Image (cartoon, rainbow, N blue to C red; front, top):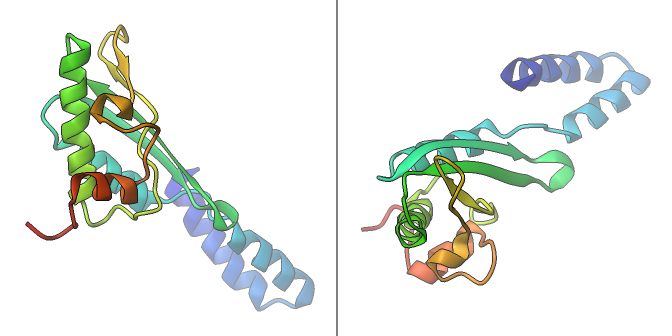
Length: 147
């Protein structure tokens, strides 16, 4: 569905908003459920892939009905938990420094190596739980866009 659905939904909202009260209500309801956030997905993926030790990264973001979620599948090149922890630390620092990532967005829950034998979370980098970007920035003392 992706971008094609987003364009179609936008045309329907504009068309229905001008077509009377019943269709206007339908247009309003349709505009509330913005299914995917491509800016979020692109920013997370591009930032993750720029980190040494990240083999692949896929993200799925949604801003539906005023809330939202971010899910990430990040594959690391690591042969030990310690090595995976170092890559996760570098990755979280990169997320903190990326100005396109909004403070309210969450980081991935887990990170796996290529064969899936090693799975680590943000705890490997010293976090007690899955952090939001705001928490990562505070933890590392990073303000995006500033060196």
